[in-house]
Image (cartoon, rainbow, N blue to C red; front, top):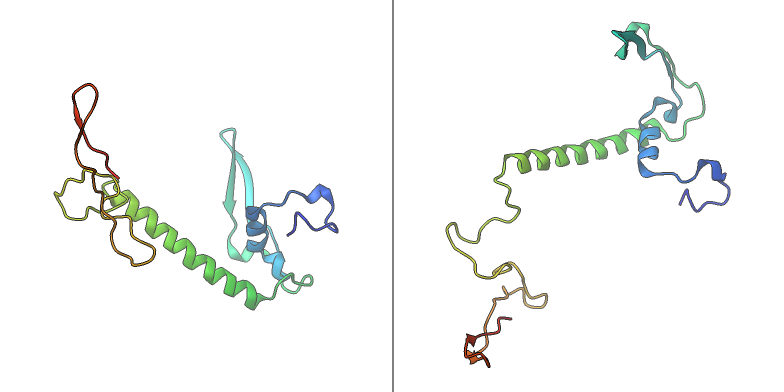
Length: 148
């Protein structure tokens, strides 16, 4: 929507979802100005960013008109936190798994066909099974079957 809006100057386009996520995480979106939250320095020719103690951070509530109310921001943050936690749990489970994305139908059962027992009929929900045609003889004299 933002990228298609003709009132938004082209200099601000394209806008990506991660940009909006970043903006939404900043206190200024709900009207609070926060200064000196981090201190930047150089140690051993490397840039170092450290968080300042809370008593050294300047906070100005109601600095400007908020883009969203605190209540709306808090509700969205709760949804985002729940989604993040689900994603973290899924990543942990994937790391701890044996790499298989689909569990075996029965442990130790060898499947001849890749989708055996996994594909279901959209109408009756019955498991679709592979079946083969009757055996036939090729011109070369070999015996074959079609599997479908």
